[in-house]
Length: 356
Image (cartoon, rainbow, N blue to C red; front, side):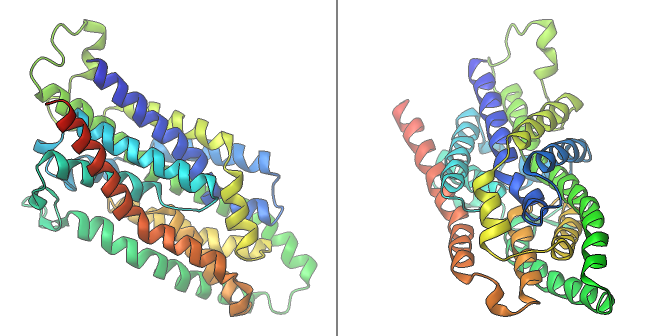
């Protein structure tokens, strides 16, 4: 019972860190273009992240039920997965790298589950057809393929959206362009924050729901549970409203603390932006994330907004993008899944063998 509460606490810690780690995804361009002050942008982002987190559970279901064999998942696995994700998030935040919180959590979950199953790779669901819907589920369709395609789509669509906007305003005076897109940027920033909430907050919801489900299936964990805590029992996997509310509030609180190191990388170091560029990048990223959330894909919002900014910046000229910064980011993206997977595996292996 104590371990369950410890895991929920770790999950909410991950959610809080995710909030300030990924705040930059939603508001970096807003701050960089001086449409809002950092404090105003963070407050706006926190509110819309909260609203977005309360919408839907498709991504939570993917995380909690579709990626690994949940019969092999126990409290140790979940705790080790969370610890590996928390460590990676803090490490990349410290160095100002906009890495993926989503992939950090997924990598940790896969690695820890693999260790608990004695190294049997079959416990990882690579690509499985859902008997009820006929749709493919698992790591390939829901994680790996979107991980590759979403940055490509972000860069290409961001480039095209920006080119179209430039074509539309080619005869406008610069002052008029700045005035119009300063106002429109507020809407695109709000949508980006809302989209981030619909996707990222759900990942922790899935982890907490999976924790309660596995605890309910384990004999003795919830014995003598007081009536006022009966809501913790979960004989089937589902995401009750209280989990959605708690995760949404936690992410909003994390968002309200800001993530200034990553904001600096995205909004200032990678490419210099004007309000029109911010509108193009945020609209592109928000649309992609919203579609992914509808399909239950735990997308990396970091990858999407970063690549969208690259695509938008490239419309000025290719050397307008500071490719040395981009190179550091790409290496962080590539290494997130394998490193957090190895870390989750190592932690789980140490705990399992240490308890024998």
